[in-house]
Length: 98
Image (cartoon, rainbow, N blue to C red; front, top):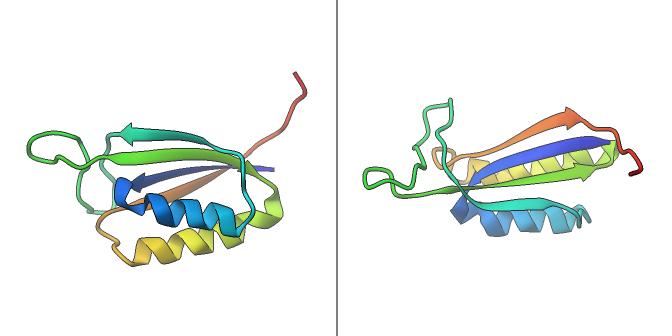
Protein backbone atom coordinates (compact mmCIF):
# COMPACT_ATOMS: atom_id res chain seq x y z
CA UNK A 1 0.00 0.00 0.00
CA UNK A 2 1.15 3.53 -0.74
CA UNK A 3 0.32 6.94 0.69
CA UNK A 4 -0.03 9.55 -2.05
CA UNK A 5 0.15 13.19 -0.98
CA UNK A 6 -1.05 15.58 -3.69
CA UNK A 7 -0.50 19.33 -3.47
CA UNK A 8 -2.15 21.40 -6.18
CA UNK A 9 -3.31 24.84 -7.27
CA UNK A 10 -7.00 25.09 -6.36
CA UNK A 11 -8.01 25.40 -10.02
CA UNK A 12 -6.91 21.76 -10.50
CA UNK A 13 -9.56 20.47 -8.05
CA UNK A 14 -11.81 18.97 -10.74
CA UNK A 15 -8.90 17.28 -12.49
CA UNK A 16 -7.65 15.76 -9.25
CA UNK A 17 -11.12 14.48 -8.36
CA UNK A 18 -11.51 13.03 -11.88
CA UNK A 19 -8.18 11.20 -11.55
CA UNK A 20 -9.27 9.68 -8.23
CA UNK A 21 -12.66 8.66 -9.61
CA UNK A 22 -11.18 7.26 -12.83
CA UNK A 23 -8.90 5.04 -10.73
CA UNK A 24 -11.72 4.07 -8.34
CA UNK A 25 -10.02 5.72 -5.37
CA UNK A 26 -12.77 6.70 -2.95
CA UNK A 27 -10.99 7.35 0.33
CA UNK A 28 -9.01 10.52 0.95
CA UNK A 29 -8.44 13.45 3.31
CA UNK A 30 -8.66 16.91 1.74
CA UNK A 31 -7.39 20.30 2.88
CA UNK A 32 -9.07 23.06 0.86
CA UNK A 33 -6.74 25.98 1.63
CA UNK A 34 -3.00 25.55 2.04
CA UNK A 35 -0.22 27.99 1.26
CA UNK A 36 3.02 27.19 -0.44
CA UNK A 37 5.60 27.69 -3.11
CA UNK A 38 7.10 24.96 -5.23
CA UNK A 39 10.75 24.32 -5.95
CA UNK A 40 10.44 24.23 -9.76
CA UNK A 41 10.04 27.96 -10.43
CA UNK A 42 6.25 28.08 -10.49
CA UNK A 43 4.10 30.82 -9.02
CA UNK A 44 3.73 31.04 -5.21
CA UNK A 45 0.25 30.45 -3.79
CA UNK A 46 0.41 32.31 -0.50
CA UNK A 47 -3.02 33.90 -0.04
CA UNK A 48 -1.37 37.32 0.29
CA UNK A 49 -1.92 40.64 -1.44
CA UNK A 50 1.05 40.01 -3.75
CA UNK A 51 0.29 36.30 -4.30
CA UNK A 52 -3.46 35.91 -3.65
CA UNK A 53 -4.02 32.36 -4.95
CA UNK A 54 -4.01 29.28 -2.73
CA UNK A 55 -3.29 25.58 -3.04
CA UNK A 56 -5.21 22.58 -1.82
CA UNK A 57 -3.81 19.26 -0.62
CA UNK A 58 -5.06 15.71 -0.51
CA UNK A 59 -3.83 12.51 1.11
CA UNK A 60 -4.99 9.11 -0.04
CA UNK A 61 -3.89 5.54 0.60
CA UNK A 62 -4.02 3.24 -2.40
CA UNK A 63 -2.94 -0.26 -3.41
CA UNK A 64 0.46 -0.40 -5.11
CA UNK A 65 -0.98 -1.37 -8.49
CA UNK A 66 -3.01 1.87 -8.76
CA UNK A 67 -0.18 4.32 -8.12
CA UNK A 68 1.38 4.56 -11.58
CA UNK A 69 -1.94 5.11 -13.36
CA UNK A 70 -2.99 7.75 -10.84
CA UNK A 71 0.33 9.56 -11.23
CA UNK A 72 0.02 9.48 -15.02
CA UNK A 73 -3.46 11.04 -14.86
CA UNK A 74 -2.18 13.74 -12.49
CA UNK A 75 0.84 14.38 -14.73
CA UNK A 76 -1.47 15.09 -17.67
CA UNK A 77 -3.34 17.70 -15.63
CA UNK A 78 -0.08 19.32 -14.50
CA UNK A 79 1.18 19.54 -18.08
CA UNK A 80 -1.84 21.68 -19.01
CA UNK A 81 -0.52 24.52 -16.78
CA UNK A 82 2.92 23.58 -15.38
CA UNK A 83 3.63 26.96 -13.71
CA UNK A 84 0.51 26.61 -11.54
CA UNK A 85 1.67 23.46 -9.79
CA UNK A 86 0.38 19.99 -9.16
CA UNK A 87 2.73 17.63 -7.33
CA UNK A 88 2.34 14.12 -5.98
CA UNK A 89 4.57 12.39 -3.44
CA UNK A 90 4.42 8.65 -2.85
CA UNK A 91 5.39 7.04 0.45
CA UNK A 92 5.25 3.52 1.79
CA UNK A 93 2.24 2.91 4.03
CA UNK A 94 1.26 0.09 6.30
CA UNK A 95 -2.32 -0.42 7.37
CA UNK A 96 -2.79 -1.39 11.01
CA UNK A 97 -5.95 -2.41 12.78
CA UNK A 98 -6.88 -0.10 15.65
